[in-house]
Length: 510
Image (cartoon, rainbow, N blue to C red; front, side, top):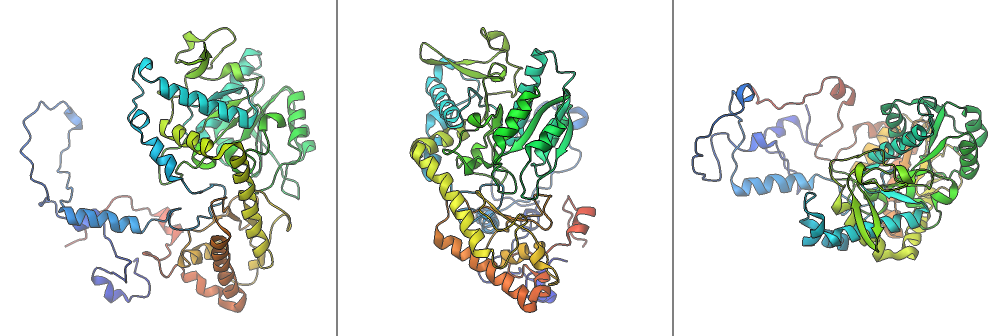
């Protein structure tokens, strides 16, 4: 049974409120199916076209009054963690502040009310906005073409590899080149995307310093290799210093270089992937350019392409004619030198994400974008420096990029685990950092503060980490097995929850 913290089970028969942390049951437990807070006229009879799909039992939706409805959702919202509440140290996810100006602009009628089926002659401003955003992203990355339509990072990976596959097909090598190389530390979406497209994935190991050795890549290359998928900075929070040499050996073998842009927040404005030899890269607008991230909201993963892949960009894509942006929506509309591999999405992409991203870029300018990257790296290294005397780092105590990675060697003999630290952080008022990822590091703890955080907010988080680790060092590691103590719910038996999931609510027996 799940209980409220520090409250005897017998006390749980009531509502379970504790201070301002209010217990909130399920919606079905709040209201009654035979009551409603709204009076509605009886609906007119209609011809039933559902046939065998018609519901055979009542929906049993609970009826609530307006105050009950408001309180239910407000109480639930208080149980959510958000970047607007506190530091969000989730490594690899770039949970940065979302400027309210971006939200205001995205809600302007010309953008917020636009419909993908509107005639193009009614949306010239939207096309101009898309052209400006694409131009910014190509300039910042040093690439030659862009597809805005991918809906998120993994979708962008799919787009980039499909462009690579189209290029191989144009060379008559699609049947021959069937292997994609990926580092052992890669995001799981990299090998998954390659496998989805029918490629065989071969792993590149990491050097003792956490980076990829060009010699290891060269040893794997051959006439069957289509591409390499490399994240830079990598998932260990380190810059792949030999990326140019890796690109050179990949291109010399006739393969392409796909760069996972998940960690672009560390280098945007400072390094151009195109100049490093990258052929295709997705950009997570919902991370790097401050669009709200997580919570099931929309993402956006535009893909930039080098000159070698530019002509294979999917429809729809923009091009300028007489200095006016023209949207090419169908393969049959492609011009000379354009060979789109097809259409990637039903519509054009995520308009709201584009508006927010362009607003962010216009607000910051190139110098501001560069400073944001520098501050993200500075903040991560500040966290590293202030915790390095207590925690261990898998690749040595050396500068990192925008996120710092710790392992669990400092916990040996204490009885505490990475998971215990994560749960104890909840009691300190923080969302846990990313744990047990990347998989190449045992007991990994990946912390990304982003550039949004001040020194004062970082000090509060670091002090919380030091308190937790101090308790462990003083022999209190076993007590952390009970954490979190002050959350609405205590720690779950995660193994049992995975093996015996309860996916449907059932009323308690009378």
